Length: 151
Length: 151
Image (tube, rainbow over all chains, first blue to last red; front, side, top):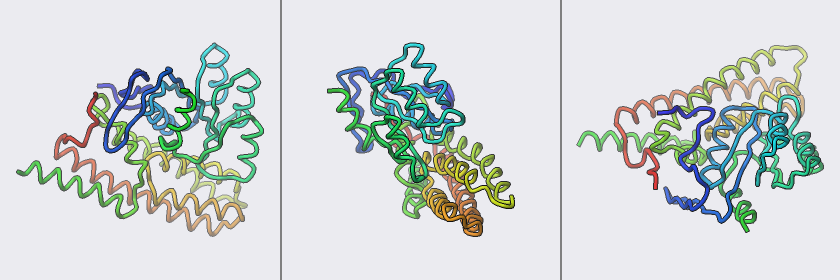
């Protein structure tokens, strides 16, 4: 059995026709095939965020750096939703978001933070993100966002 | 039957972790990600947390020995630590991280050190409790609640 580490794919492999009921959660099914990208330097955060996006029916990739995210997009990958951590090692979260917008990315981009620092939200918003959210990435705010994207 | 009794014990242990405020609903999200394909997901993620955080804690300890303190660096480390702790639902550890940030903001080194000692204490207590919980869960064998069935 493959261990649940980097590269793990959650049980939901297709985002179409998913409607999982478990422990009171009803995970949605989408008309479109929704694709997501997680940009986070922490392996643990990447695994968990990718997993949660997957549970919400989004086929998700995860990368460690802003540079890797930009490279992926430059190679032609497209995403419906991109979540970017505030702290990235070289190219910062806001810089990554700005670069994506400059490249013509029209996806929903969400800046994520664990600790709030003054000026972060302004910086992220100025860079062109659609929203700025505190971790953890939660189905509670993710699903309504995805519903909008699906319509 | 003994197996049922063991399952009940595991259930009680699990519930007390929430009732006593050690874990929050994020831990339930991790459980949602556990299924037949990834039956040990929660334990593996928690193991990863303790592995990666131990390095981070060392860095923070070293940074707190510097004179003068580099509050920017401390903030960055703490953001990482809070992010990881948030990902597994480590509620008390998260709270200490938030408190640490408050002291960092005003340049209160004493407060930072005190809070970090408390954070490490909570981190260690949680580790012991989770280790005991996972051990008990393994001994009691699989139950219907342990894995989300594939539909």
